[in-house]
Image (cartoon, rainbow, N blue to C red):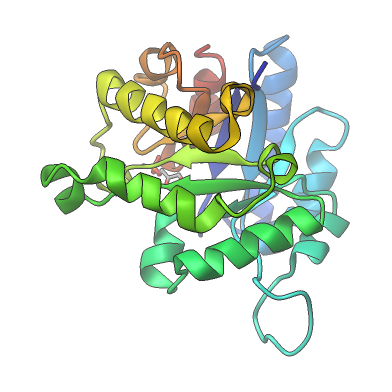
Length: 252
Ligand code: 13P
C-alpha cells in the first residue's frame, strides 16, 4: 500500500542555526509522539541539508532538497546536482514547485530532465503540479494538471514512475490562507490517480502517494487527510514551527 507523507517545505526561510534548531525540535517531537501514521520529511534550503541530515540521522525522518539541477555536473554556476544531494544522505528532492515554475523558468521540458536526473541518482522526486486561479475559474484545472503530468513524467518507465511522489498544490492556495476544500482536493486527487492509472495501470496508481499542498495547517489537515486519495501534505508556512508541523503529522 502507498505511504502517507507529511513534508515541510521551508522555502527560503531560517538561518543555518535556526534550521538546525527547528530540525532538532521536529525530531524531539516526532520521537515523543510515538508511532506516526506517516513519514515525516524536511525540505530545508540547500546549505542546511548536510546539517539537517546529521540532526535527523537514525530517526526515520526523511530529508529532501527543494530543487536539483537538470545537468549532471560541470560549468553550471550556482546549481546543485542530484548526485551531490544524494551524497549527503537526502532521499528526496522537490521538483517543479510552482515557485520554481513561475519565478525561475522551470518549464515542463526542464522539469522532465530534472526528474530523470534525480531518479538516475537514487533520489525520489516529489513532483509538484497545480493550476493558477484563472485556470480553476475557467474550469480547465483538470487539463492543466494532466498536461503537467504528461509533460513532466509520462515518458518514465513503470519502474521509474514507482519512485515518484506527487504533490498537488493549487497555486491560488499557496501562502494565501485559502485552502482547497476537502471536496475539491479529493476530486482532483482522484482525477490525478485515474490519469496515472490510464497510463501505468491500477496497481501503480493505487501505490502512488499524492500529497496536498496550499495553506494546509494543523486546523484543516485532518479533514484533508481523511479524503481517500489524499495521502498527506506538502506544508509551507506551517512547517516552520515544530509544534504546528507535528500536529499536522499527527492528523492521520
Ligand atoms: P503554504 O503551506 O505556505 O501555503 O505553502 C505550500 C507550499 O507551497 C508547499 O510547497
